[in-house]
Image 1 (cartoon, rainbow, N blue to C red):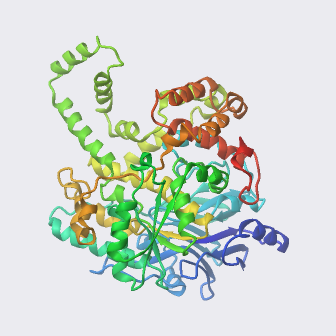
Image 2: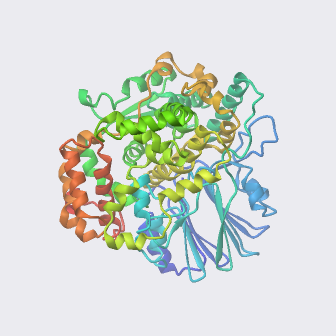
Image 3: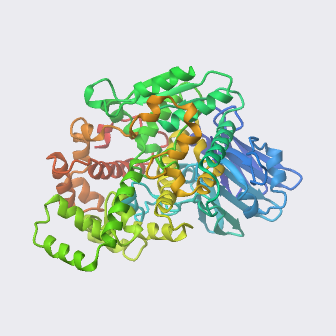
Length: 633
């Protein structure tokens, strides 16, 4: 992973020195400034491996910046490419500057910048899932791009104002989706897109979309599993560093175990593996995966490391963690601790991120299967029978749980959009409308919100299968906007390269080419993944139940975190911030602390948003704050 910054103007030496001091004081390798015509570039690689570079093509007068690694694989060969492009090969590939065509042939995990001094065109390209960050701001005809929003602000050229339009997205979707950010003047280039800039004007272009091809209905499951194994092997091969020194996160589940198994076939050296847990207390047993990870570590002879996180460690880390977030996130804690732990041992680590979503391994798919069955039964029921049931239900109190479920089912039976929002949104519209103050509601009136985003995504997916539509949304939003963004943000924070081979474009295209009924085979989660990689996994892994990678927030929020939550969400703090109705916030707190609401994420995400504002909006720290959390309460 690399730090980079580009500005469409020449900077004075004093400005370069100031930005150096702010951005790169605590990282491993020294940064360097480059001048290419009217552009100033700053670049810094985090590792000795070729996981990023800046290169000037003298023959064509072009400058290339790469964060990550790029593979050229057009799909015309029978075998998947395992060759990572070097700078000269990349320059030759884009010799004709046919950006759209060439981007569709790229694989790997990358951000790519191309500046052509002759035509004075800039292209800012993100890979298909958005594995690497790419932020852009424009003002008065010039452009600034960088790997972090903070780098853009430290140029002094772009105003730093919070984007209130991002608030409803964060509440509903626990993140701020591309191209929005939490700042008014900065966007993030969406995954699978490139931004073209010339003569002070920019345009966004989509160059890749999952499910663009029709699934192959003729191939057998065995043949499709063989192809999946081949592409997974090639993807992991490309993700392994050239120097052979590599590690992997390891939970002992299907995804990280598959990564370790495939990596062990290729490296010829001892892998380092890392597992995060929460102590030996029995109350944390359902959150820990140590025993499963140890089984895989012993099976492959890895150098295994374990790390316990307690509430005290979380409280101590919260100010620094929050400072690093380019936009608020409700799911960054585990990424922060996993990456900070691995960074003590190496500078490149592999991740199984995305496996739950693309291999149909998440329990959300189980819920979707059941819901599909119920909706089908309801829709096939005679209209007269439906009317009788509605009439009977109408006389029963709403608080009866089966009645609530029935009414919910009837409401959900209309569109897939409603199903997705019901299953995946945290704050839903009725509560959100009550939550906003009058002033914020007026400011947001008429602007597209989370519902509009989900509707747009459903309209762009090229599949009529409900499972495929959900997978598309999980890839486009939850992987791109939450998981990968948090992963890349925390990787930057700790100067480490994190690679997720399952999200290589060729893997996603292969998954999209497999019919849905072959991916999960009558509701069997991970059917195709297991068929392709069963020899890599021991029996205990194949048979274990799905365990989510989450922190014990419900336990901590009612105990060690209760004081910070109450102070961050005090009535005075809420009134001062001006976003939310203090009475609704008080009701949410009462419901949680009196155990009327078991889910901690409502009040926790509200508290995180307030803390993010205090650290990143109210203050202007040049480096991670060394203060205790109490200093921000």
